[in-house]
Length: 153
Length: 153
DNA sequence: GCACATTCAATTGCGAACAATTAAATGTGA
DNA sequence: TCACATTTAATTGTTCGCAATTGAATGTGC
Image (cartoon, rainbow over all chains, first blue to last red):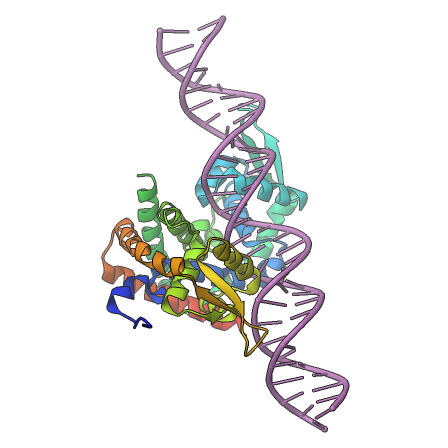
């Protein structure tokens, strides 16, 4: 018999999944960012790395990874692409030869000015007030941190 | 001179980006789901496809794509993997030969019962009440829909 | 009926994301 | 000092995610 939609199935319904809400919102953001970042010659994850570097320069790969929750398997090739685009320079630390320090080039620093237009466009696309966005952001960050706490057992 | 942290830089600070909150929360969810879904032999996007199919079976690829905001470039290889795992069957529609209909196998249907344990574990990992989760979810979905509305111009 | 556009899935190529492994540098304890 | 563990990036292989293109099937306007 063709199973009827049952209350017992509610936990498995797509529209009840908070993870799917987050997952699909992340993709929606990505699609809004794409045309903006194309003008900067960046992908979205590359933009995140640049945000980190614009705050503080000359940091090891590991620090970037901890900030963005990414590992070297993702960052190493990404940083090589940023280097090929002349936005960063990768140099082994002399104090600790295991570390690779990432520094912005002049072009990398200069790109920050062009990037200032991005957050405005995103705010407009979100179609809500800054305070509302901040409130949602804080809730999502709190949720993320609780999830990350569980991962570390 | 070593630029001081300035108020003008606030819009570009990583911790002020709602997109990064969403992006990093999505990855956190993925990491929490991974061990649970390993037991089902599914990846997270494959799990989403199965959620769609458990609601309604025998649907064209396009319908799945509209539901999940994914296109054939993502779904075609993913569905072939689900077929290789004997969870779905792919057949060309006889009414419209352009369409490929995705149907669950007996194994695909059966997996639903094993999957019922997943949402409970996620709820526990989220460490907050169902009503709080529903509230955040609804806000994120509303934001996502506003973003998607902008993409379609 | 026929040229034309549209729809749908598949394909190709590139850039993430991550698990697992490797290799080199560094730290630690006996 | 020397064996051993730890730290750090890099590498390999698999799976997404998407843009762009292809090709077949269908729909349409004349």
